Image 1 (spheres, helix red, strand yellow):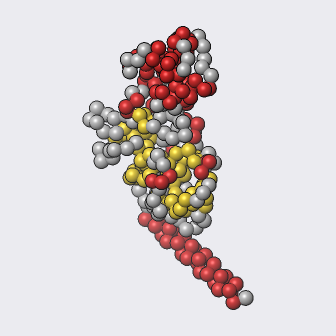
Image 2 (spheres, rainbow, N blue to C red):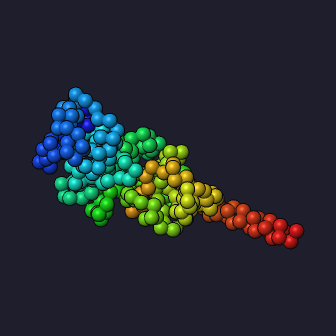
Image 3 (cartoon, rainbow, N blue to C red):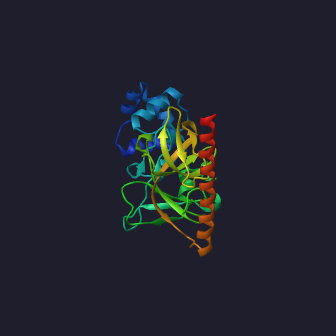
Length: 258
């Protein structure tokens, strides 16, 4: 039996629908539909599309995920015909937040759409985070001070680009950079412009085709404290940044005069 056959049979039984009714909706015979349900035959792509529309679930979900393990009312529908993200709660009703391990942040690209991978992650619950799907990602590098390595940024899942707000921070999951935390600037026809809070780094564009997920900043969790000398180093870095800006301004004035 395939996942597809198990899924469509389970959906039909739960909704108390006859095989004949579904076959009529698919414009095929009941006998042909029954073969899809018992796994003796695989439907062509046009029938898969009809099944997807009939049940209101993506093809990806129907053929690759055992949805019997995930009640559809507790899952978040994703665009572009992709797998659903299960929303789970603890015994107190708090949203369970999956934690992406520091060493496995790049591996998230391979598992973000696999419910079994997501299920294997450790979780925490934060009672003040409700009404949405949240996930915790590790901060890396020095591009977004004061968040240092060891800090976790908890993000709320964003379903549509129209939800992005200028100068707000987001976690972007992209094919090239994996997990990256940046401040959104503006949306272009084929990409979005983002920047780091550390002005040492130049703003850059993320092509829309590379974006897999977007998570809006909800809160942060620090696992290390700052040492006093780190603030001194940060002040020195800011000094060099200011000098860099001054040099750029002087060069611009010289160019205008010439």
